[in-house]
Image (cartoon, rainbow, N blue to C red):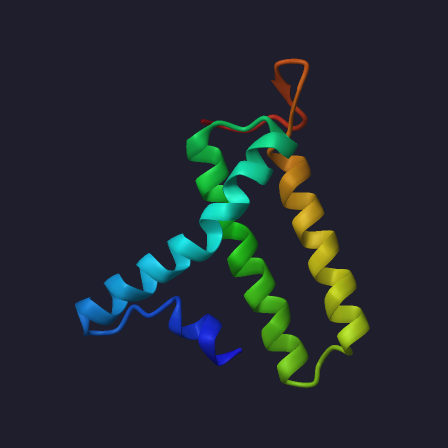
Length: 102
């Protein structure tokens, strides 16, 4: 889980934080096209979803590393969380599946 924590560096060293942000951006960029194709979301929402997927996945990874979850449970919970995020941002027939503020 260590490398994932480095991607969220927000300490006093601005250069480290900037570099971590750039690396995270490069890691999530390939997924944005897939998220957009799956959800029909606009670019701003896709960027939000990508960031949320990383955060949710990191949270489950932390639980697995701490021994709180088995590997199987971690995989299942991560898949459920990502599916819920994608579903919440999916556009169907020009409307959101759930009502939310812009």
